[in-house]
Image (tube, rainbow, N blue to C red; front, side):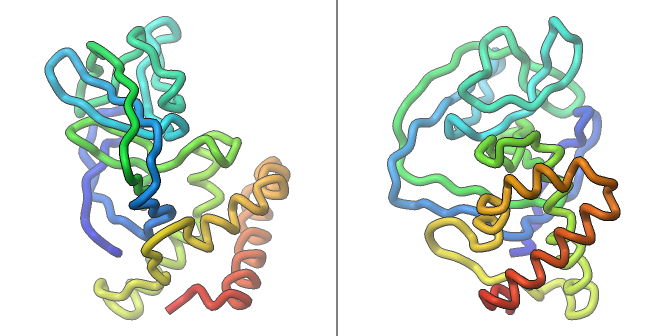
Length: 204
């Protein structure tokens, strides 16, 4: 982990140097339905049906986050400094999928901006990014103390990472917490995570 990657800012106007914090989900042997979006200039990206992606909604004149299965040809994909029309959308089954967690919550794939989150958390990508704040803070702190080669979280070869599983298991409580003041929410999440991490020995 700690691999350098690129992402695009939320407004689509800036290229951001990013890092992969952990692999939240690895399923190298599972066959899954993918949606492949091809732009009018030939760029394409493939996502599982529940994976989120930022799109430009021309009717509302703003960028939104939608799950792949809800994106239509009326939407525009986000590339650096431009919004690009979708030429076609195809569905096909592919073997294997991977879900990294980055510092920004976004990732650049074939010059197209995607979210690193799915809608399986049943909240917005911005909310998921917020509740993952303790993970990002811990990652930055340990890398600052131990150096940039330090990987603070255990790595998984297959399945859902235990920390991601924690968020899914407690998503009902987390949805309640995010309605409280942010400093209270962050404190409680950190306390819950510390207890969970200590119990399951998830740190290196």
